[in-house]
Length: 253
Image 1 (cartoon, rainbow, N blue to C red):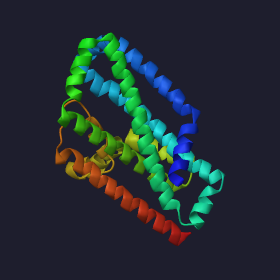
Image 2: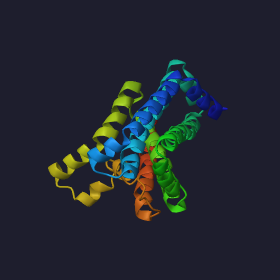
Image 3: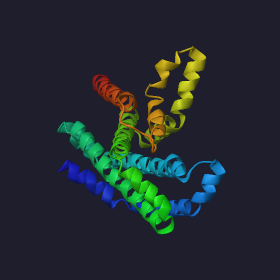
């Protein structure tokens, strides 16, 4: 029941459909200027697709996913549903279903955006489409890309949940999430320079792991423990932090 409710919230939000139209228009513009971008950045067209276009799409989709996750919490707070969930001790279950609903909905959302992009490529640049098809038929590359994509989406949801757990305020949660995704690496570099912390202790920390894993998301990604393990371990760390914060709030509250 809770799972269906969380899905329903996502489907009824009109701005989700507006953003997908905007993404399709952006992708059409990218395809139209693909050769120009390749010349400007002095890269192959495939490099431009994987290092720029697909990542721009992904950043926008994660941003929309964050808005949906945080606004769902706000709706529950305004309607006093969160109080009922607390009384019935269903808040953790709701959070799990909310993450699952967001994950499934926005993975499909992203796949639709990419499928439309590939469709435009097929219509306008058949030779580039053939190169993309060869890459997609490579099980190792396609599987590694899909696995990293799913892990990054899950990790992003945990960041949104941590933000809401810390602040119980949608504006602060949005600000915290933006600070993490935009400024996490800047904060990590400041810590390294100001406090003389060894680089290896910071490079795989929660502050930098999203950016580091995000940069691995390209046509050369392979199944390697070193690619996926740091992100998975940081996700476990986030879960532990969320649980500890909630326990502390219960004790203090």
